[in-house]
Length: 137
Image (cartoon, rainbow, N blue to C red; front, side, top):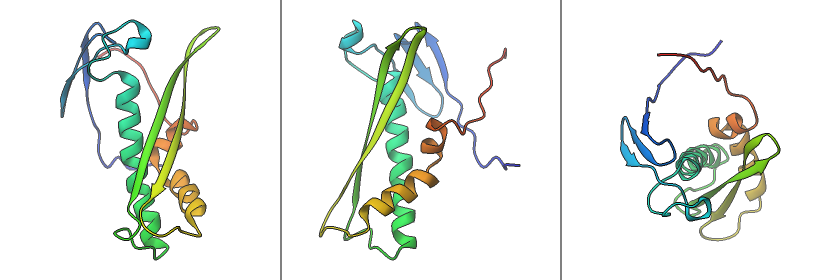
């Protein structure tokens, strides 16, 4: 059984991919140029990528500290690529995390990234470990 530590709540209004999200932060949402939009502002994929990259970076720094690796000497830069793909029955997301470490090369870099991928809640969610519900408010 899990214990809820924090719940984020964000509300989407307007046109969905061409609307607004409000909650702990606010942002206009606009379709990317590739989908016929202006390309200005955030979209669901950029918001997901930002959240995944930030969460993964935190998980990676925890993993580094546990392994005795200096975060300040090898500060990680984490990029999340999230792609919207067309499939026969609609759309599907795919993604990739790419990590660079500052400083001297780390012999255990791949191991650190793999451990962070196992620990990061967003990485777990994209692997299907996510309790999702949909209903009426």
